[in-house]
Image 1 (cartoon, rainbow, N blue to C red):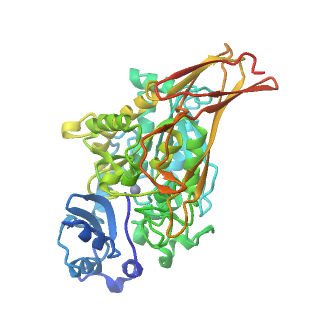
Image 2 (cartoon, protein in one colour):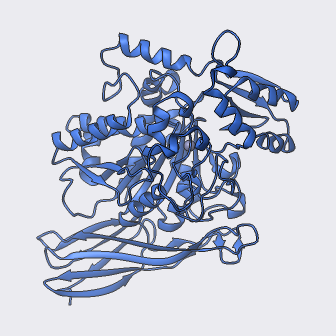
Length: 541
Ligand SMILES: [Zn+2]
């Protein structure tokens, strides 16, 4: 999900939620999601200025809002808005969850789980999968600790997973936004699914031979842990940045006075950072942070994407029933790879029935994951907004979401993920370096360039130094094949002079270094999407 605006008034209202004195007559205030009528752009802007919790789901003439207390409804009514109630009592979903878990021994999800995972569940399950399947699952830890001092963990799935070969990477991440619980569940369930079907389903077996599936289900563990704990922080969206530039040892982040603080991790990526659809207000739901990549959570994903050949990326969010691709702000112009981008989006939509669109046509933002990853690597990245009703609906609804229902029965999220994974494997959709080099040699490819933020206020755009580097080992027979992203890079629409729409490509090269037995040699390689480059590296000297 994307924004919500907050203000001193919202801060006071949220703080009121923890005080029984403010409970509605006849019991606690029920948190609701309502669909507000917004007939035109001025009324949408006015709504955003009310300091209410705007859900990211919006469409022609409407926008969803979370009403966290009776005073939120009063504020909406006072401003002259009309609405329909979409979810009358968000708390009722937790009652439904308890009943479902009590009556269900094993759900139809690949893991069989019957309730939302806690942070501890994610970590112990990933560790258990790596222990149970040592040749197919490798656990890893991302470089930076969170502001509460946590490690961010992931798993990599593939046959001979520890080999240093040149297979392409399919990356799926979840829980940038703390309250979007299904976004992590979807990544975990896909992992279980692949492992269960491996060896039984011919295509999945082939995909685990030819790709690596990297899952980071919980990008923002501090925020998720607080949200999953329920109570006043159940609808927390952001990370735990209470004071810019400083860590937040517990219990700082959980204090009621800090409830509205934090950085929107999905506005903190460096490309175009600080521009439209992000806020400089530390209490706003879409606060972009003190600088591009100021947050450990976005830096972790940047480092992961920069050090692997991620040919297809999916970042899971909730909710909206949409599949989003660049542009994220209209002034970027249409991406040079729009045809391929749209074709894959359409193929995923055919599986889960979601609406594919350029993200900026829904509403405009800057600093999101996929805008950065595409313009840095040219790998195609999508944001999928799962679900249509709320941030973490009743758990049992994830079964239909994952496996599909009605016209999408047997397809669903699972089908969409497989379509994306197939694209990650498809050599027509990325580039290949192949050739000869000494067996056991290490090959590395690097690229360095500068991306730019948006101009922020009166300040000029800031440089975002970007370096991509990854490596593989040449097999003993001396013949290597390396699936990589194209060296030819999309021309970035954010420039030192500001934002301008571009649709061109930069004829940039990879710098490839071959190192063997203490010698090394370097060549420069130009390779475009769908093309292969043949390299005879001799003895690497
Ligand atoms: Zn989100």
